[in-house]
Amino acid sequence: MNKTARILSIAAVAAFSAFGAHADEADSSQFALKFDTNRTRAEVAAEAATVAQTRSIEPAGSRVVTYKSTADRAAVRAQAAEALRTGQIPSGEFSAM
Image (spheres, rainbow, N blue to C red):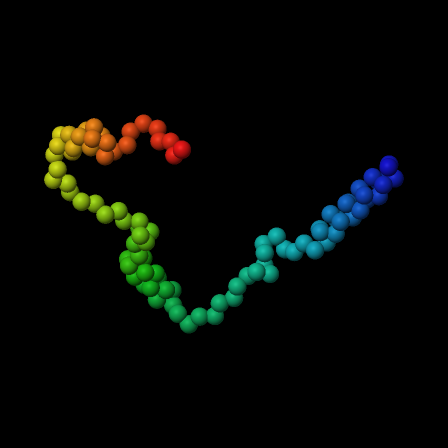
């Protein structure tokens, strides 16, 4: 058992040391993008300013429809109490059995 553990630990050390041999530059230079453009800095800045003005900070579909109620609070409470009393609104725990 001791010999098997020693062989496995040597294999693990060898595997981890092999990963270091494949390391590249720390600045990720292999992923650097090269751009060749004919546009000036002012043109790009002007386009970015117009895009920012037309964008909304509100996510699509997140606007909630609001309305102004003309109902009286006391009248709504009285209607709710009446509906509860007549059984139109269930109250308490509901058992489906």
